[in-house]
Length: 488
Image 1: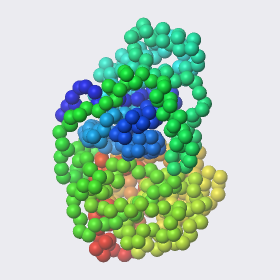
Image 2: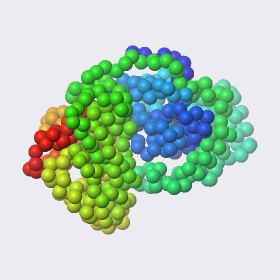
Image 3: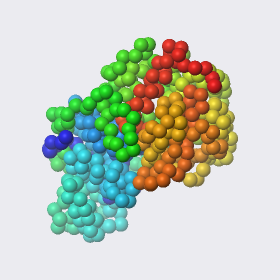
Image 4: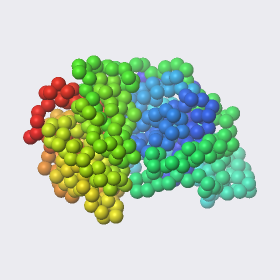
């Protein structure tokens, strides 16, 4: 399988984290969105929050490109498929250009994705403490891997006209085009907290920020040079994905999963199961692919809010609680006592539940927030959850300890952890044995699987394990037909 050369999108990379690639990306997206309603963006890696900003800028979902959570083939199909009908395509990288999942290779790095998609790279450089030394940095980035096509640079945090003159003169000696120049400024700042940027739903000032970013986009970049790189190819460059769903994968296998199109059911289920998905500022971490996969498998997705609603959607056949920031809304979640009581009763009666990270925290008995205040939660998991100062972060290879709601014993999947909380009581029914990326030994057990519950800190991208999504839809269908068992 090969990707044809030629225009088809652009990758925005940083020479390291914190150089301003998200600001550059959003400035370009906001400006492009004023030119066309068909701007498609992507984010390298498992991040949820940057894609939220992309979607606010373009009005279209941003899709994650992660070859560990999915596969190289899935990344290629996802990019190609989502670009159909788009005028422009832009990929925001992760960390530095060659920073991968481990220090041993650049797997899952921005460079890895650029090679997979055969796309040119625009490198963002923080020039705030540099002049001629920028040559050494760019010489290394351009020559480390000749397979990565460095199209040019964006000079960020330039201090003065004289500073820009020094940088420009230096770069002239290596003939590397300058596609954009952003001066040092504090007028545009995206607020952050303990897990990164504050999500878009909590930023009423975001429209004004995006308007200022669009102005930067229009005035700080060489659009004559950029536009041909951003324009998408007008032909399909990949062979269609194979069907049916990928079977359970053995460790080391690379899946070749299908790409699901939202609204196009690949499997007709009778009756159609209704899956209630918590979507509000407390629960906002969902991959668009995952929702599309559920829809394609025949599920009816019903959004609702544990913060605002007095009860879950009527006739729901299952509950899906994604990740997010329940610790920031613990008081409001605790105050919705009638909802918590209703949820507890429904779950004990056998309503299937899938919960990731923040969803797990909500299902616990108590949530102890960042200020050491304890708040009552749903109470179906016999543990408290406490916020800590320690960040748990990284890809995990998970082996199912036992058969559960969605997995068979011995099944393996890849997931990602990103949280600053921990459960205070070990699970008596752990879902997984975990192994860090690149490790040879498993280091921990994790997850809760009592009754009809699947609750874990692991975030899953179902492009890499569609059989889990299929199992969730099936147990919801069984519930609708009255086939699910009652409480244990």
